[in-house]
Length: 117
Image 1 (cartoon, helix red, strand yellow):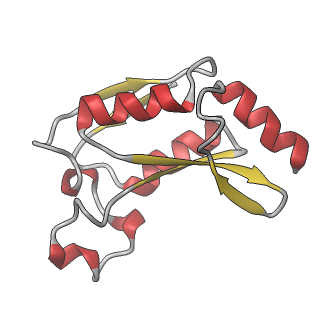
Image 2 (cartoon, helix red, strand yellow; image 1 turned 30 degrees about the horizontal axis):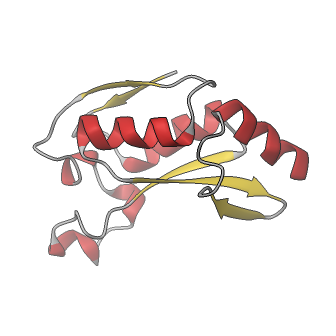
């Protein structure tokens, strides 16, 4: 899959695309430190355009496939766009942040979430 990064796109759009491809995984963006003060309290995070988070407003595409690890994808977002990410895996009715298994591929992560669910 390819995710288009543009200052006009909403965070929710990126999250929906990712979850559509990997339904037992979720991506989130660390925003509090990056958002201007006026946006921190007034807008739900998903309603914020990426332009508010993008370092120097770069635009481009991130290519992701099921063989990428969480660490690799997080590094792509950080290196190419200055975006900090968190990833979560479904576990029953909970979403658990992926920390220890960051070297697993997206396929492994998604399958693990499917098994527990």
